[in-house]
Image 1: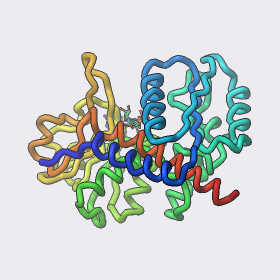
Image 2 (image 1 turned 45 degrees about the vertical axis):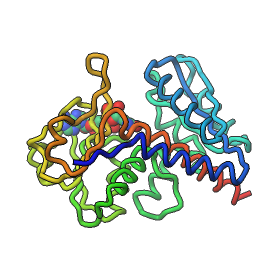
Image 3 (image 1 turned 90 degrees about the horizontal axis):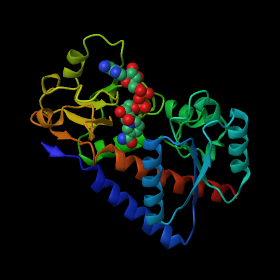
Image 4 (image 1 turned 30 degrees about the vertical axis):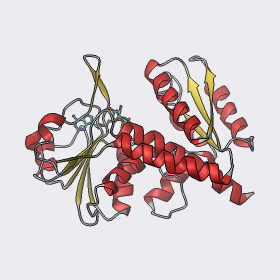
Length: 280
Ligand code: NAD
């Protein structure tokens, strides 16, 4: 078994990005909109800020109170869209109850939608048109798979989870890379049997240690997107210690998809910057 070290891969991506930004002597600008005071969100935002600073991206947090109205939140996004000094906008999820994330995301101009969650970018991904911004976590998973050197074409990939931010865009992305894709969810029957048919397993369901060793085909490549806190420790969706005995490659939690997702977000910000620069 070989480990897919997301932290190491992310460091390589960030270093390359840092070089490019320094060579071009530019200052891409990312704005993270944070609503309310969710503790986990604050940690994620801090990680993004730290990584951005390292590569030379100016990252700024716009904090809004938990009781902000949908209208005021939307107006803030529109204001950022019109600000030529801002190249990327992300809205940290989850939003406090009562606010619609879909409505906010649709307000973000597609060329500044560096999370790639808006309908325009998702549409380009689903239709395999290119030219759009690809959602950071699916892009992280793809890069981690590519890093193994295993050819993707024709492989059966089972994705556990069908969320808008991971499972669905990842299904499109792997399909665009010629995998045969199955998406499993809470209503899927015989999940263990289905996973046993997979060459590639991506677990993104938020159920700690759901995927067991005996669910995996020998030599399967396993990417664990899940992040749960169990007894104060971070834990993925795969029973890592046991599963590692049968996989060819497996990503851990922590040091897996998490750091790569941050790196992909910053790569997307630089891409968005270039897109806007070309448009003038
Ligand atoms: P979500 O709650 O929006 O979606 C979970 C999906 O998993 C749903 O589609 C549901 O149908 C499916 N599911 C849940 N239990 C299942 C089960 N027992 N069997 C089969 N399917 C099941 O979650 P999300 O936002 O997609 O995130 C999933 C996990 O990935 C969470 O742990 C989250 O913290 C983590 N995550 C990590 C990163 C990262 O950067 N590493 C990014 C996003 C999400």
